[in-house]
Length: 111
Length: 116
Image (tube, chains in turn yellow, cyan):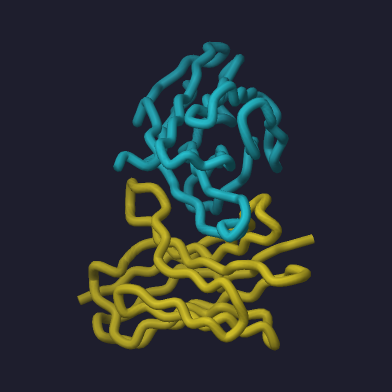
């Protein structure tokens, strides 16, 4: 069945460090891929998405590229800020039905 | 544009009590979902609906019931609250037809439920 495997946390980085959170997926066909962010006490917000192979999603300095050959959608940011501290979820959706979420990666950025 | 609205935001229940968590969306989405998120954990799907009158079980449906009488509303019912149901509950909606077959889900702000 469909599934998402996400890098486990927690991750602690210093401000301005480079961020990578790994995400790989299992799915037949051509799913859409998403990264969501959850700030403390809030719901999930869409951070970025990609709907086909080789698409790059980007938002707020974050980027992720849909790699079908490696079934991956790794999240990257060149220089993190304290305000990026949150939990990040990778997700996929195929054929209109359910979403499949990773277990989430907690990021803490220290000044 | 309100998006997905959940009420209440917080609730404390005693064991054995019942309650309904309300969820409404104003985006005319046909898909709606209920998830629970336990502390430090990911999301677990409780129930989902692909349209008015149609619901289906997710990963953890025991102890819950849902109904979908309109496109907008998707309430979640807890009949006999148990401490294991202490969690944060999220409602979400998405489109799912035609060119919007695999678009993103929109989430509410959550209901924090404690059963004592």
